[in-house]
Structure formats: structure tokens, C-alpha cells
Picture 1 (cartoon, rainbow, N blue to C red):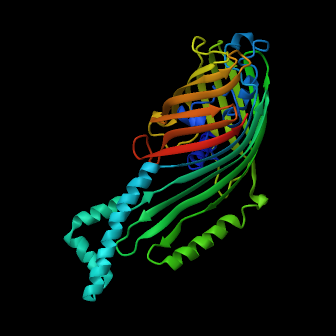
Picture 2: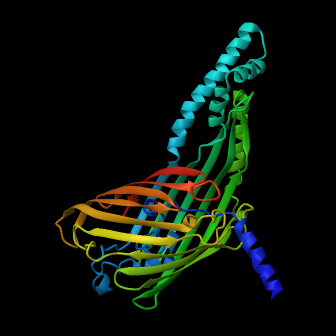
Picture 3: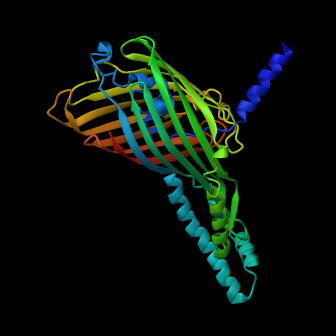
Length: 415
């Protein structure tokens, strides 16, 4: 018994310090707080719960599922997506402070040349005489400027779906320094993932799904760039570019994993879901990956949903997400995601269930890990979709300690 307890304790410690898996950024999900494990009624089932593939062409189909026929129908999804994200508020504030810090260094350099003194001595004397300058430099120091990019190719049909996607992230920050300012790239990584899965409905109420994925992570750890010497900047960036790209197609470092999921239609309006994702069989670029266990509930009130030419979709969802991740477990809200969405067709012809949908909009809102999230999407001619979402990620240990707000936009084409 003692050995078992020790083993469980060691397992918990290992999970607590393991890295996060490659993360697909779903604009639809992020806009409603990333509460999606029980909602999954389209291609997002590939990323959140493969059992949701069984819902495609069943919800909204009176022949296959009479009780859910009122729901807007979705026969399938085939999409190409390109998006990017970043904390734009931090960008603007850092730019303004950086200009002020630059003036401090320029003035010190000018005085040093005029009086024949060392620039470092002039700078230190200025800081000693004007302590408010130190405060300004500190506000500029260690400012993270995280940038993200995503590219997806995805398709989903009844009981089948797959995707190829890339998630990239670079997190540079500024170090004002007392003598020489530096640009430091804390972490740079690119995750490439190919995944495919299937679902099966055991009954009209219960379905299960399973998927397999292949992932490769390439990363470069901390890089220091001297901002006072432009030749050093160019040489350093070229070296790091080769570090990041020379081995990007080395498939010996690819890791395989599996995803599992279940859905249960408790009533015609209430659905329960659970998934265990990112069960990788070996490390990714030296990172031990934490599996993601998420459970949730979705409510789709019949009164608000319409399966007509001017269709309407309305969902309210709640998830307890990433239960094994102990990095932000000081507050319960760090695992709690909740949100709602409403999608409305505004223009359709000729205006009945098989109509051509010319224009539709989606509005969403919610809370992810205790922080507010929101977003919208505009779809034209059922082919082009522009989406936007904002949410926050916790950089500290507990919710509310250190918020980083992310803004992401995406362009999608397909049906």
C-alpha cells in the first residue's frame, strides 16, 4: 500500500511539472471561454472531443435524429485557416515606453560626447539624480511581447474528421539594463500536428470517439541580443534562424499520441461530454506532455434554435478543463471555462431549410480560467469567414496574479 501511495505521489509530481501539449487555437471556442468539450457539433470535434463527429449531419436532420431536428444543420466542414495573435495592449504600451527609454540613452550619449566622459558614467549619474527615470526603465524591463501564428487544413463529416495544423509562438522581452539594453527571446517554438479520428454512436444518446495524432515540436531556448550593436543582432538572428529551421523536417523527433472522448445526450437540449486528449507516447523536444482531461456540459434551448433558411444557433457551455495540469491550481477558476454563443443567418435565399446562406454572424462571450473572453465571426456566401476573439492567459501561479490578454484574428475559406 505504501509503495502504491509513493507511486501515485511521484506520478502527480511528474504531471505537475510536465509541459503542455501542442495547442490548437479555435477562434469559435476561445471566444466563448474555450468551453467546448460537450458542445462539439462541427469540425471543432477534431480538437476537443472526437465523439462530436457523430453529431455532424444528425443535429438538424429530422430523418436521422427527430428530437434534434430543430438544431441548425451542419452536413460537414472543409476549411483552410490562417490566423495570428498577440497582446496588442502590451505592444503599444511597450512601444511608448521604449521611445522614452531611447531618449534617456540618447541624451546620455550626447552629454558624454560633449564632455568627453564615459557614456555609462553619465547614464549612472543621470539615474542617480533622477530616480523617476529608473521607474520608467523598470516599467520597460522584462516586457514580454508574445506572438502566435496558426495555420490549419481541416475536414469533418459524420463520424470522421482530420486536420493538419501548425501553432507557432515566440516570446521576446526587453531588458533595459543599466548600461546596454538587450532583446531577449525567452522561448521560440513551432508545433506541427497531423491528426485523424472517428466516432461511433452506440445509441441515439451515447457516442464515443477516438483519434490518433502525430506531432513534432521544434524550439529554441533563451536568446540574448545586444541592442547596441546591430551587427551582433543580425548575426545572432541568422544563427537562431538556422537553429530553428535546419532540423524542422527531421521526422525522427515525431511523437504519436491518442485522444479519447464520449458524449451523452441527457435530454434533447442538454448534452454531457468528456475527453482525455494528448496522451503522447514519448517526449516532444524534451518536454514530457501532460494529458488533458476535460469534462463539460452544453445546453441548447429549443426555443432559441431555428433550423430554417434564417437559422439560429444558441449554446451555453461549461467545462472543467485540463484537470491534470497543476501549474495554475491555486484557484478553482483556473480550470473553469464557461461561455455562450449565438449564430444568426441574416441573408438567405429563398428562405427555407435548404436555402443558400449568404450572410451569417456569430457573437460569443464567456470566461476562461476566470478571465473574460469574447469574439465574433462573419460568414459570407458560406465560403469566406472572418473571425476574431480575445481571451486572457495566466502567466502567474493563480488566477488574477499576472494576466496576459491575447487578441487573435483568423481568415477561413471553405465549406
